[in-house]
Structures are given as C-alpha cells and as structure tokens.
Image (cartoon, rainbow, N blue to C red; front, side):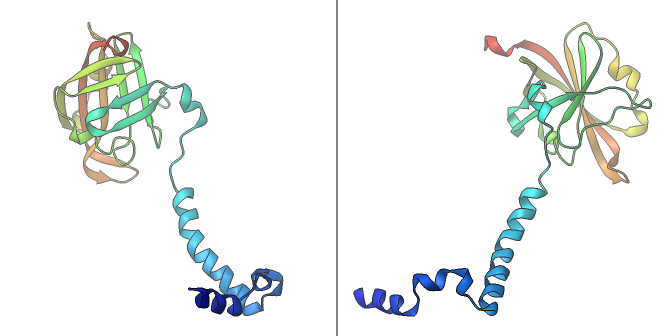
Length: 187
C-alpha cells in the first residue's frame, strides 16, 4: 500500500494542481470536462417550472390518492375567459358555495385522470369527497352551469382531456365534482 502512495506522489504534486501551472491543453481539457458535467445539471435545474413567490400565500389543493399538492392562484376573467397558470392551479368563484379550479393536464393536473369517485381532496382547510367524474367534448360544456351557485359547498376541478389541439388545448375536458365533507382541522 505504501508503494502505491509513493508512486502516486511521484506522479503529481500539489504544485500540479495549481491551474496557473497548467498547459493550454490541460486547461482546455479541464474546462471541457467541467462543462460536460455541469451543463446538463444546469439545464435540468434551469428548465424546471417556477412557482411564483406569492404562491406561498395561496390556498393549497391536495389529493393524496395521486400525490398532488399545489398552490391555487386566484383567477379573474380576462376577455371573457379564465386562463390557467402554467405550473399551478387557478381558482375562480362567482358564488359563495362553489369554487371552480382549473389547471393544465401537462403540468399540475398531469395525474388528475387517475382519481376515483369517493377519493378525497383538501382545499383551503376543508375536506371534499369526489362524487362525479365526467369527460365532455369541449363544445358541450356550459360554463354557466358549471359556475352556477350550489346549495352545498362544492368544488369543480377541470383540465384538458382527449386529443391534443394547438396552443395547449384539447378536444375534451375532464370535469370532477367534489362535495364538502368536513373541516380538515377536525380530522
């Protein structure tokens, strides 16, 4: 073992580790090696979707059966449409007992098609039970009906389904209805 260390010691010294003593070829080799290792890491981290800083103050939607936990941004109607945020869900409500939550099926609601009737979700410290799942053609959806008031606390989740269309759209919508069960703090 000592002979191995002696051989290694004779091959290089601390003086050799100083980049100011390297040849141009050694510097190029080091830079190329460093970049080939760090560039993929940098790109992977840099291309991750970012969540806005104000998202920490948003209510959270959790569906344990699909390991979903996301902040839910408040939405406003712009040009007679609701636009889902890129990397989290968005909520709109025009009546006290109904909340409409949308998100992209390519990001935040990627696994939403895996939920089942009787699964539970938690939103804004309340627990809801999923009572209905349906997939409708985009043209058959009446937003007036979806947004109309309910007698009991209800959440409607919606995301794209079916065949992809241009501009992050699809031919169908997955619509999930969940009814209030209890406050999350009472469990």
